[in-house]
Each structure stands twice: as structure tokens, then as C-alpha cells.
Length: 250
Ligand SMILES: [Zn+2]
Image (cartoon, rainbow, N blue to C red; front, side, top):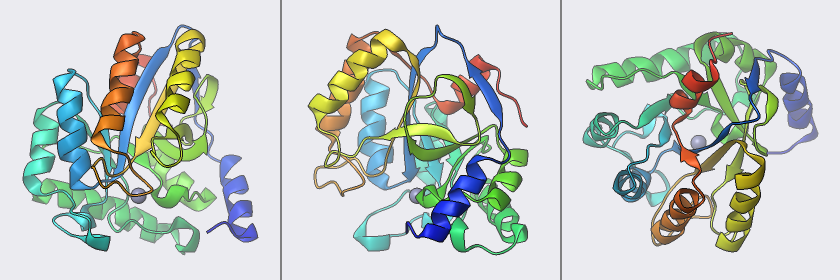
């Protein structure tokens, strides 16, 4: 919801809790990230990544565990365990997928993060959340302050590629939404990226034949992965990139 007040909230957030990270000029890597995340991202997209020996980052809200909001199947415990066993990363997306613009009090944000982590441990998934993505891309100064103490990076939805000096608490990203960006558009973006470099973070949701306007088809996803391989662009999880770039907590 892009009300004027929310735009102001976002602007204030952009100017606060800046977590400086340097992306060296030689960097040329892509991270594939999935938000929420629907079961098809765990099955179809992960099969494609596994077949190419690549890893992805899944920002999950555990209130979606074994649920079916808006008629979309979400992940189960086995999906999460398999994800971790196969070397993919789980990131935090709050427990209830909250709207940060309408969340009053930092205590609620803190409770949401703790609840998500506790839920992960209670179902026996041996992983921790090191990185975060903002539900709906909503950022406030209050939330950013809390998040910056807990996570190495927070991914937003500001369109762009991370180059030079960036705010690790507001990583730029590019949609892999098939209805928004044609494959040709992504190919030309990747060709340009292959020359200029940086850290490109893609994000999507469902990866299925009947994809939503927030997702893409398995064929589209596979074509993007294969193009990266063809262009010799490294594919890494957000966690791997934080290690490579030496990003530590604020
Ligand atoms: Zn989300």
C-alpha cells in the first residue's frame, strides 16, 4: 500500500540504521531468493537448482507451515529439512508475515522474529536464520533498528543491483516475476551484468506452471539459471555472499 505516509516511513527507514557493506569491483554473483515460500519453490525451483548444483535462499514465515493461503500449497516440515540437507539457506520473513507499516511497538517485531526462530527449532530443523527479507517490502526505522541487531543482511524490494557501497539492511533486488519481466529482458539484463558485475539478488515466490503474478514457471526459472551458468556467473546463497564479502552484524 503506497500511501504518502508509507512512502515517508520508507524514506526515514532508508536513512537510518545504515549497515555499510562494500562490494568489491571484481564481484560477480547472483543469489536466487524465494519469499514466504510456496511449496513449488521448494520442489520445482529446488530441483532445478539441485540439477545444476546451485543453492538458493528461502525466506520463510513459519505461520505458513502446511497451510494453504489463497489456495496455494506451502511447505511442510520435510520440505524444510530437505532444503537444509541439500545445502540451501533458510532466512527469516517474520512468523506471521506482518505488515511492518502498521506494526506498533518494537516489541511486536522482536516477538515475531523470536517466534519464527522458535518454531523452526521446535519442528527439528537444524538451521538458524542469519538473513531476513521484509514482508511486502515494508520498512520502518523502528523495525530496521531491531532487525539490524539480529541479522547479517535484510533484503528489500528496491529495484537494482548491489554495487560499491550498499546498505546491508536494505539489499536491492530484482523480481523474477514472469508477467513483469520477459525472459528476453532478463537475458539482456544478465548479459549487461556479466560485463559490469556486482551482487544481483533475484526474488520470486511460486515456481509452477500456473504461476501467480508474483512468480514464474519452472521453464522460465530454469532458463534464467542456465543463462547464468552459460555466462559463467556464480550463483550463491545470501549466507555464502555475506561470508565472501565479510559482512558481520551491525
Ligand atoms: Zn512475503
